[in-house]
Image 1 (tube, rainbow, N blue to C red):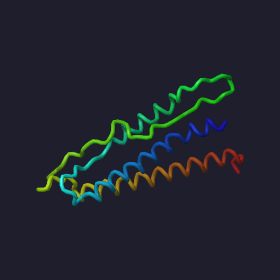
Image 2 (cartoon, helix red, strand yellow):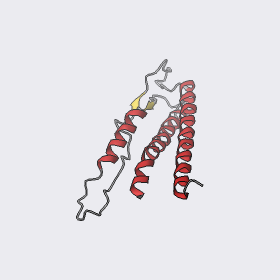
Image 3 (cartoon, rainbow, N blue to C red):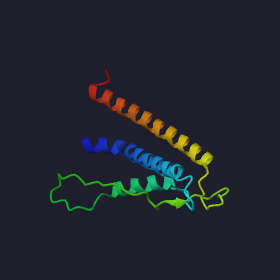
Image 4 (cartoon, rainbow, N blue to C red):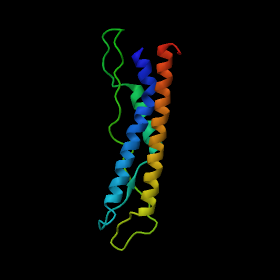
Length: 136
C-alpha cells in the first residue's frame, strides 16, 4: 500500500529535488557574476527529470529472497548529463559569461515552477487524505 502511495508521489519528489538543484546552480552563477573567467552553467531540467524517473523505476537491482520483499528504489544524486555551459549573449572583457538579466529571469522562473510543484503536491496529498478518511 505504501509503495503505491510512494510511487504516486515519486514525480513530485524528483521534480522538487531538481528544482532545488537548479536554484543552487543559478545562485552560483549569480554569486560568480564578478569572477573573471567564470562560465555560466545550467542543465536541461526535462532530461534530468526523465533520467531520474527511469532510474527510480528500474530499482537498485538488489536480490529479493522472498516474494513479499519490496523492490528497493534509489534515485540519481547528480543531474543527468551534468552541467553544461550556458551560451553567452555578450561575454565581458574578463571572460565572464554571466548575464544578470538572464540569471534573474531564470531564478524567478524556477522559483515559480518550484512553488507550483509544491501546490500540486499539496493538492495531491489533500486528495489522498480525503480518500483515506473516506471522503468526509
